[in-house]
Length: 199
Image (cartoon, rainbow, N blue to C red):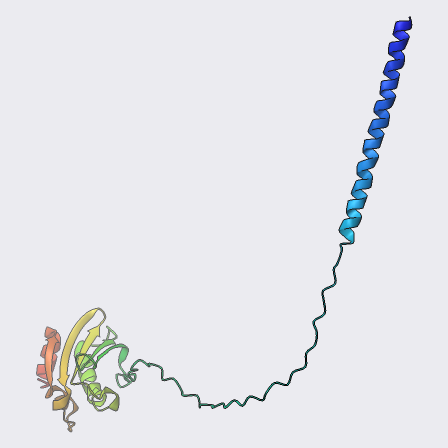
């Protein structure tokens, strides 16, 4: 039994030594950690040297400044055409204007009238209103004015007035048509114009 008691005592001794060794390892890192934490909290600060104050007399420098007045910058402005007044066409539901004076010296109008209006009467009214239209200053620079009359979706009459030949007279219709070339006329409008002695 001696052999078994020696083994038993040896096993207990080894166990005690291991326990003691483990307890030393646990406490050592705990102390190291707290020392590291303290070191992190209070870092070492080295004071920087304070620079010496040197008093020198700097010679006075004279600077001339010239203030130039601000010159306005001219912006490129697109050539804005004045709007062409079409209010003389009082029987029109709508008037579309194409102003090509800068390219072809022409102004083109498409005058839309109610399709229930008799096309002969509509043509007569548009020609009379063209008399007033040709005398307004906002068509200056136009060599020709083309007016198309639309009744619903159909062009029933179109004429081009040579503005240089237009002379305002007592008879509005003849004053306009004497300076005009009829481009398109529907047969029923043509009959109306001939019966009324317009052309």
